[in-house]
Image 1 (cartoon, rainbow, N blue to C red):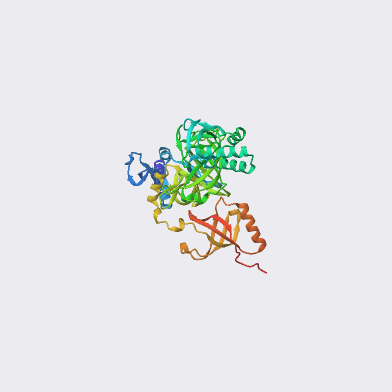
Image 2 (cartoon, rainbow, N blue to C red):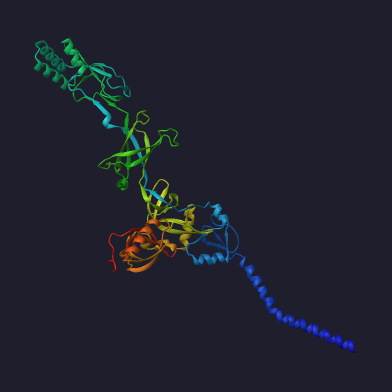
Length: 507
C-alpha cells in the first residue's frame, strides 16, 4: 500500500515539474522561433526591380521591358537606397552584363591641349612667279610640263624681244666707241630689262647683238604652273610659269575662334599625318613650332589660321596633304584629370557617374575646365581619390536622376566663383581649413566662418610654406579659393595667396 502511494506521489511530482518547466520555458521557445522567422524573412527579397528602371517593380522574378532579368531588392538595400537619394545599386551580375567600367581620378600636371585639322601648302616665300619685263616671242621652251623638277640655274626658255635687241645695239656701239659712261649705262639698261649677266658678258666679248636671250631658273623646285608654249607672244603682265620649292613647306592649322587665345607664336605643337595613322613612317609624327598667326578669320569657315613652317629636305610632305596638329601647354601644378569619355555633356551642365561603394553609383555635377585628346580637366565636383564610370555611365546616370532630381541643383554647384577669405586655422594632419570668407553675391550667401577640406591634388608643400609664414608673421593669411559641396562636405579645389593682407601685425 505504501509503495503504490509513494509511486503515485512521485509520478504526480514528475508530471507537475514537466508542466511547470514547459510553462517557464515556453516564452523563450516562442522568442527563438520568432527570431528564426525574422532571420528567414530578412533573406527573402522585398520585391524585384528592373536594373535600369526602379519604377518597374514586381513581387516575383521575371524580365524587365528591356529583356533583362529583374534584380531582387532586400531590406538592407532598400534602407540604403532610402538613406542616399540618387544612388544606383547594381548587383555583380548586372554590373557585368552592362559592362560597367571605371577609372580613377588622376592628379597630374594638366596639358591644356586641343587638336585641329591642318593642311600642307607651299611656302609662299620660296615660290617664284616668272614674268618678263619686255614683250617678245618664245623661241624655245626647255621645260615641257607642269610638275617637272627644276634646279636653280637650269635653262627655262629663249626669248626674242625687239626692245632687248635695241638695248644690245646701244651696248655694242658704246663698246666700239670705248666710252666708259655709255658702256655702264647700256649694261645697266640690260640689267633693268632682267637680261641675265651671262648674256651681257657674251655681248661684251663678241661685241655683237644676240638674236635671242636665254633665261634661267631662279631657284630649285618644281614647275607649279606652266602657261606658255613655244612661239607664244608674251607681255610683261604675262605670268609664264611658277616655280615652287619644297625644301620648306607650310602647314596651315584651322583653329576655332574660341581656341585662338590658347595659341601663341613659338608654341610647340605635335603634328601627325592622316596618311599614316599607325606611325608607319618616321616622318608621320613630329614636333614643330607656331610660326605665324593670321590676323583675320576665314570669311566662309570662320576658322582662324595658324601657320607652322616645316623643313622638308626629303620632300616627304607635299601640298594638300592633311594632318592633325595638337597644341599643348602644360601647367606647373597638379590638377584633377579624368578620362574624357566619363563626362556626360547635356548642354546645360556636365556630369559624371562616381562609384561611391561596392555596386553603388551616383551622378554628380562637375565643372570642366577644358579637354585634351583623351582627358578632361575638372575644376569642381571631384576630390581626387574617387573612381568615375567610363562605360555604361549613361544608363546609370538616367537611373540616378530618378532618385535625385539633378535639374533642381542650384547654380552654387555649377558656377565657378573665386571667394576671398582669411585662414583662421589649419590642421595639416586632417587636411582641414577653417576660413572666414567674404560674402558671395552670386550665391546670395553672407560672410561667415566655415570648415573646409582640401582637395587631394592641391600642392601640400606650397600650402605648408604659406601657412608656416602665417604663423611667423602672427597674422591671418588672406586667400582666394574655389570650393564646391561634395557629399555634404565643402571641398576647396583651387587656392592661392591673396594680394592684400587684411590684418596688420599685432604688437
